[in-house]
Length: 203
Length: 274
Image (tube, rainbow over all chains, first blue to last red; front, side):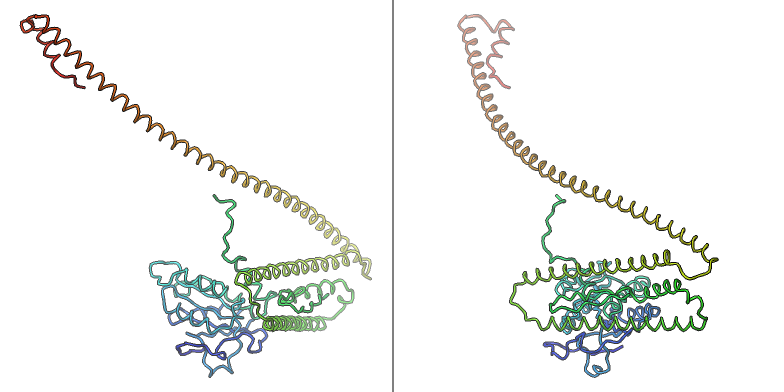
């Protein structure tokens, strides 16, 4: 797990962009990067994913960071990142702005089925300071799906469910399943670009 | 049996990307076990040799899985490379969206085709193994014939049952299809009805409004007419009252002495009031 320092980003240098095909993949191993600011529950989610993964025979490495780009010191020893999870807490404005700046440091290849957004605290609307519309707009802009879930202490079952779901996606992008990440991404999203659908049966 | 992987073509869309693992590693184990039961020599192998064979099988499965994984990674890398080599056209956003949609639907089509082919292949393999089990007589002793007959009967019954179930399934499918079609028609008709109703309602509303307007105009005209009639009647009454008064005066009758006449004169003096 790598703790990263925050950096102000006016411009992103090409070498700082995270790319999926930069390094060789490893058989029966996968690395997930969780990007989320402090307080979004990245550590709990990482632990849940590792716990869920113990029976599957996959060597899962979960790395967490509070911002991108990742520092250069660990660049050589760091394995290939197979999947990136951006965590947005709707009650934490900073988490949203962190993710907004982090997505700019990720290569577009990741947004073809190797990344997703996880939205927490989507149920209670009273504490929210980030609108769900903003999140869906961000997800549409990057053509990536978002999953609503819960990571906090009291939601053990929901955390496990979320971890399971993410693990399925990670397995696909690590090449363990018979489908490509692109196909999974395709079937998760609606096959139309916000076109006006003809209301044939509704009056 | 192994399905050969197709060579990737020189387009952005890679059918190989979505190709599933042909008869995945686990099913090769099951196929092997069917064949191993058929071959007569298998029964004569020792326990050690059986264990070794199982280990070999596990190793083979592992190698096959690794081979498939490497192939998938290779195909993905090649696809990415091809995509990057393509020159970006100066298309509008809409054209790009349309091409993306088209490619996505192609991808889905191809993957479903391949999955169906895979299923058909599996079915053929199972069918082949089954027919071998049923019809290829092994070189065995006579005592082994009876149980195999029973097994054959059992399998024959199962196949019959399967046939019946498939037939029923086919019937249900057809019924569902017919019902779906009729449902669609009914929905269409109801929609048309609703549209017609709406038109009629708007026409009805228009007519009502017109009627209301007309009645308002009429009523105002009527009122005026009635008012004028009333005025006329009032003026008639007052003029008649004056004429009566004048008559009584002119007749030189002492109307003040007669209480009735007095009352009459007074009532004639009061103007009519409604």
